[in-house]
Amino acid sequence: MRKFWLLFAQATTIGLAVLFIINTLKPSLLPSAAHNGVVTLHESVSNSTSQIPTAGFSATTRKVMPTVVNIFTSTEIKKPTHPLMNDPRFRFFFGEEFDNSPQRGSNLGSGVIISHDGYILTNHHVVEAADQIEVALADGRKAKGRTIGSDPESDLAVIKIDLPGAIPAITFGHPDQAQVGDIVLAIGNPFGVGQTVTMGIVSAVKRNHLGLNTFENFIQTDAAINPGNSGGALVDINGNLIGINSAIYSPNGGSLGIGFAIPVSTAKKIMEQIIQNGSVIRGWIGVAVQELTPELAESFKLGNIQGVLISEVMRGSPAEKAGIHAGDILTMVDNKQLLTDSSAMLETISNLPPGKVVLFKLLRNQREVVVQVTVGKRPRPKQLEENS
Image (tube, one colour):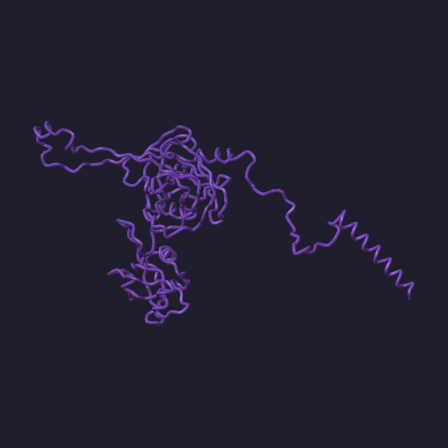
């Protein structure tokens, strides 16, 4: 027995010695385990941390810059007519002070060529009320532009130029795949200094409730966007268009790192309707809504019901004709569950074709009510209003 015990002791001693040597010289040969409370992590062996081109973005800008144009517009401004301006003696004494001859105001912006036959996508506010439009291409060519149509509620417009020779066109990307942190380039004509490229990242997506447009679904970026960039291109690192630069958040008009671009997925739908119809046709039922806050839900004793509160019904509207009342809770449109978001509800109804009969599910006095609504055509607003 004593002999076996001595053999065991010697084997244990030799084993511990071997483990000590391996732990000292080749610890990687031992299984991973926690030592003194520190957990061993398995890290990636790949040294690739980015897909940024090693030569910068010169190839991307060479691809995109020919498709971004400078837009110069002018508008005739008429002064109020003075009743004595036709009297030559009055004109002699007061001259230009009361001159009511028309003057011209100018504006500048940017645009993106979207097709080889000269269609250009830009912002509505760039060409709004313009009676003369001049488009300057990156290669030095200039052409008169004409407005095909515009949509003030999304702040988009389409103009067209006719030029001999080849006209470059941008490649559309997939903004729905854009993620916060992606690198983007903004290209336009800030302050009229000439075509300029700035770089930043996607700061946020699906920004709304900003009060800029009726229909909002912005990509937010910190790429420098300044006055004159409006209507220009926001592209990914491969040079694909993902947005139309539209607005900035700034008290002084300069870039503070908060810019907004309209996703090209939205712009494409608007563009196609404008080219086909000259305007955008949207569904409309004539109601104003507000968010169903937890406080409102509690006051209406709704529990976990989701929907939006109908705060106003317009006289003579499709909603009034269908029997929808102010105070109703709209929970479902066309058998599609609504989110507790007025923007989602507005988008849902605007996508309905005018003339279609749609089922609306409502809660009224805690009872479910279903009505049939014949969708109307959304009127073109004189001023942007948030009703659907």
